[in-house]
Image (cartoon, rainbow, N blue to C red):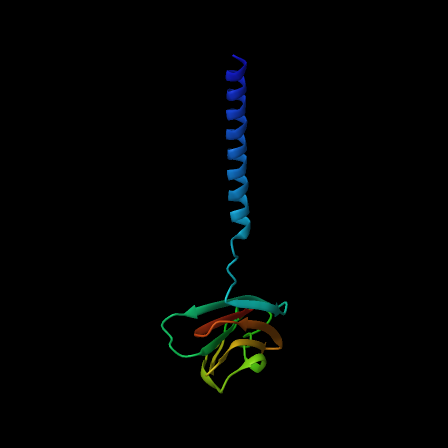
Amino acid sequence: MKTLKLILTLSLLSSAFFVYAQDTAEKSEKKQKIKVEKPFTIHDKSFRVVRVDVRKDLKGAQNVIQIDATNAAGGTGTLTQATLPPAVITNVNIVNGSYNQTRELGKTPRGMSLQLLDVVFPCRVRLTISDQFVDVEIKEAGFWKVAVGLAK
């Protein structure tokens, strides 16, 4: 009878230890999972920049960064001002990487679009848009669209 109790006690302890060991192994597997790094980073922006949207266009085959700058209320009349000026890209500074040339796509009453062609990635760009700034780094090659929205 004592041996039977001893055998039952040992089997319960060993099964409890097995469950604990399995649970610990699962937790260590979860800790070892690698975090996926974003292909872009927004390092800094000024207070009037209310939106910075960075997206990769999978249809584009070239290494291009397209920048679309818009003033949230540009081209519309307000009580204090007849028309707010459109967002204008005045300066493009490369901190890391390079590009070959720029192409202006067009202007609207709210802003403008500009492309950086033949970009070498990773590329970190500091943009000056209507006396405001945005600092964006893109790490992966491709056709990228950066939409910047300014507020009054």
